[in-house]
Length: 136
Image 1 (cartoon, helix red, strand yellow):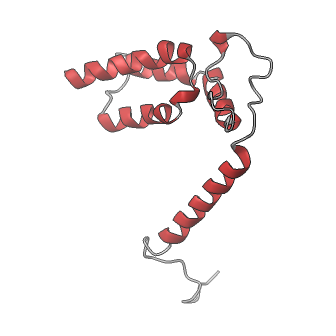
Image 2 (tube, one colour):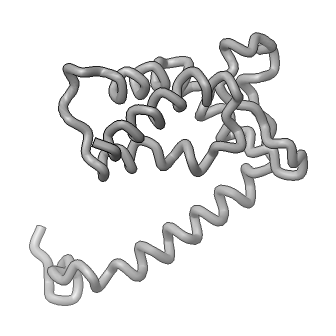
Image 3 (cartoon, one colour):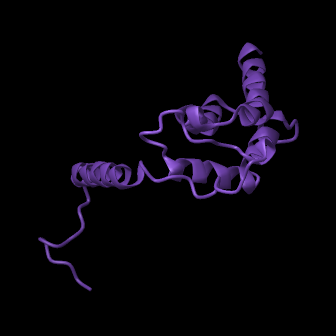
């Protein structure tokens, strides 16, 4: 398909970024507007603390069930175990500050939903490894 001058894709990367950013903001807002009050569907029959990686926040006005479900699935499929192994392994490639930041930042953004068991079992060893990395 041949493009005419008015339909050709832009070769200037900054030209369409404003439109993309506005669309991202719009869909982000709409997603949270519709889903922030949804209850978690994975915690309905789950009472064992060892299997529970996240709980809804104490603020019942906005339970963010979709986020609790996402954290639960991440933990159920071994994500927290893999994260812990990545930080504590001596055979894995060396960690750099940007990698450490990329791996830990999402959990800082949703820390109010993580259970105490998840924090102490999986994230605390990562923080200790990070402290050793920074101090050396």
